[in-house]
Image (cartoon, rainbow, N blue to C red):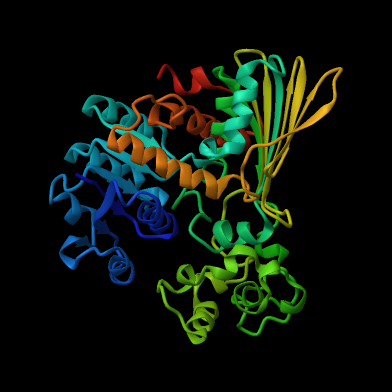
Length: 425
């Protein structure tokens, strides 16, 4: 008999995961119920997956009032709602839950969810998808083998991409730490999770510097208007011109956001007029210098670990392309990763290219596919070993480091001792 999965939150990530289940796991799992606060999303998505209207819900409260209706649950709503929805899911009785990251920007909330999951005997998995890619899994295996010796340092850079940063963290869903979460948590808890995983040693202190340097009204070019299509005289030379990024630029310039039509309008099928109207008066058509954003557009985090090693994470919102760089130095050799290309140098020997089998997509899409596959295996009982699974217990450290980095940054970069700040957990 097939296992069933319900989904709360029908944005890009939720529908992507539904697509993976339908494409790769339909013999073992079927989608049961959907929940979203937007009727348009339910009307657009439910027919594609054969979900009848009576199993579509317009609020989490309405959904949970039905009791436990499926074997598994995916929660892929906006950050600020994760705590309340996940708490309700655990209290309702769901035992296998996949939750989009981050869990919460509040330490007490994610600790409460960790403890509640343990109390209820539930498996709460967080979507730190990068761990699941062949590329990062291969790095972990090399480190664990001892091939490069003991880790001395890790230097990791998340190049967000200028267009991606503007889309998500200035105009989009994560621009304000008070209505969402800080950008270091929303964007880089993936990367912090990787670093902590590679180190396999407790993080003892964190220091950080950075801020919001560029996307401010005082940096608006002469002639800029509140909306890009509102008579802006600086459009021609502005790389953030929304009309260009979402409508007129060729794909190689606008990158993935060229195809984010549903994000712009809220509808699955759009005419050119729909897109133009969304840019003229919607959030994604705003001038990046006149938005309500307050999250960092650049930040560096230094982490010291109990084993004596040090890691530096650099979040950069101004790169031309989206990619991650990683340089891991050990006592016997080093690993140098660029995108999904990996080289290993053993001291005194030759450099070798490590073939990881990852496609050239930064490990993210592949990681998404493998994460969903792992979730399905756990749901179906085909896997019981939780080694390297990103459970809520494993997630706490990445969130603690991210929140501690914000405390440090806001206090001039002073080190934060984790055990002193958060206490025993």
